[in-house]
Image (cartoon, rainbow, N blue to C red; front, side, top):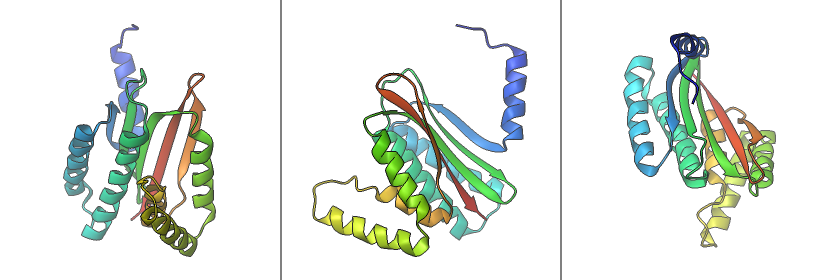
Length: 179
């Protein structure tokens, strides 16, 4: 293992400040960790000094993002998941990164691209369609979370998928919430 020296720590600190990260977590994201991270998000609201309706939107988006990582990320991977919250120029940023099996990459990418082409009314319509589909099936994974995030954020969803090995990819996801 390479030594982590003071210069590296200094560079990391400068990077966190430069990128306006208010909170960053790296590790395994389990249901228990999700609960702890959501409590930290709530505690951060005192520092942000924002109104309740914006707090509620940010919190709900954080819940969806963390549940996606917890439910769909590959557990036991050598690569940790990440969760971050930042605030820059009147915009809150919530980001996640996690390992996914690459057999879901194409459908995930297709869903995200479709969501990003829709306006607010289109998102509401597809949300209702997915809800109807879900009522008629045993599945609880109808892609509603991503649509809900796009509706609450009122912004396009930013993502990137990078290959890690023959069977896995790293999925980076970022959502911006305007004040």
